[in-house]
Image (cartoon, rainbow, N blue to C red):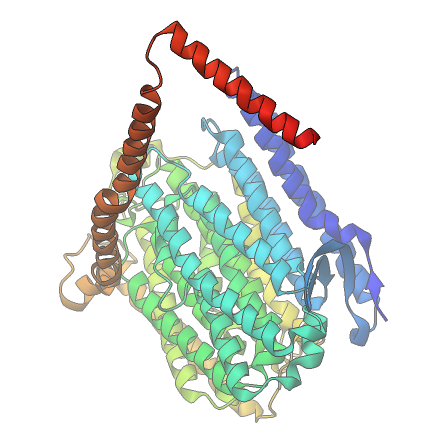
Length: 637
């Protein structure tokens, strides 16, 4: 039985309308006295908040439906039909998309509210909120799309918005370059997504190209075609969710305003790849080889990004590499067919990563846009609310019990071990220790010890309530949402896993409870060791070291960006320059010169008839009239 809900379309529409209204008002007043920031703030926040309210309505409506029929649809119109390909602009809400709707709209709303204080006084205040609303609306289309084509509309929408927001401060060339880098790298991934969709339609799409129809026909896929589709789709996921080898854009995305970083890293763009793999779990479940590739790429990305995070000095880049690393955990989860564990980590990560980025924004705001952790120190007394909330976020990110990150990360590691991937489990535990180390390295350098910049410290103060209240709300979430999927060993009943069961195809192996206890204690031990080492090195303050050897290579990200530039960018630019040098004189200029020559010759030919004598022109007229008369008489006869 199909259940419909026409109000579903309003969820993405509301922030999109907000973006349109703010954008039009901004353009109409750009040459006049700008409108009040309060007006723009209200217009910017009302759409996300109403979308969150509707997401709650959807959730409770779904909850009232039996698990076997737990989905809602809304068909707006037929988008296009070409041969066997029939695509409706339609939305689907099932347990998976409902969970994403809740945290995307909730955290997106908090980031909008926080931005009111952070962006106050910015000359492009209205434009920022127009882009932010557009970003949120695009992500909601991605989540709600009833099939891969509609998902791709939102997929490209968040790609566009990331470019606009990363390069928001266009006065700085580096910001524009960072935006271009994000856009180009994502287009590489998108090629894989498009090819994967094309193969999928060719293989089974004639029976319907929405998720429900594809799920019914997935068993028709052959091994070769199915694995190819899975890997091509994963290429798209690697681009959006910054996995090896397409992770290089995400750390540079820090060029945009800090609330943008929070939105990209916590609730929108970078989680899209994990969502897409989970959405196609009905295909990945048939081809465990493809899942293993996903898991290994994910855990190796987690390891590589953790290494980079250990040596960074920019507070936002530390958090950026932690996002890349945590995304690796998520892909490890969905790759070993623990889809609910991977998605639950997406959910908890949204809270503590939004908290950490917004907390970093508060520090940057208080220090007048200083981002170097080696120029901070001793701020816990100056920024007590920011400090307390960021410590909670750091404990959740590190996976320290009983905070939310512990439950979601531990579930992924346990699933990897239980599903026969001890190598992934071992690397995951090692990365957990590294994560605890670099997270608390950041906390100790920023908030403990003595101020390294006395002048900046003296002028630092806690941000206004419009910024600190979202921090407190997110801190409560980071501390408590882990209990929503409490495992049986703690007396829980895995609420999130049971909720997601109708949407994902996964197998829960039966293993000894002692295996779970062992996995948990090992993970906790790694976290404790990481925090202890960080405290010993940075707990009472430290001076900036002179990196050498491995540390220097880690600080420079193993020179991967330089390698890409030398091997990919420079040859492409040289090839383009060579082609331009050939085409310009031989093709482009030759066409222009030929047109000039032709007009000259035609002009000279007609010039012969322009003699300047009236009697000659009279003869031309007589000849012309005679020819006209002759042809008219012929047509009459």
